[in-house]
Image (cartoon, rainbow, N blue to C red; front, side, top):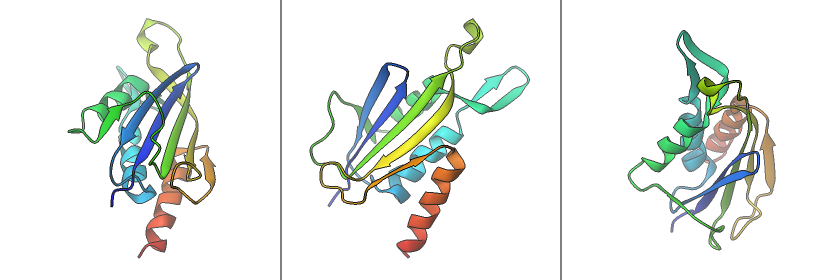
Length: 139
């Protein structure tokens, strides 16, 4: 049986809703989302900005994964996990259109068929710690 999930990418009033049909649990989709976001630090001509992310690159990376994710218009009724990535724009000028900082990552298991509560993380490393803890609990 598949573990379904939705992912919401929030930036101000803009919400992008994605659906993932399988491996939606924390050590599956959660780890993939972590790794994909971590690879999307905002790039300047002189290197990476480790405090900010490129939201366009993150979204593109998810949508180009051989069908793992699809854009949706409503939460799936059969999901067990809802991941909400909440960003804040750090626009300075035209070179910074897609530069955002992470406000929080929420993992909600009180949706659809999920039973596990809500957790909110302020940093990518806190999110990884929760994934590692879930991995240890499942061994």
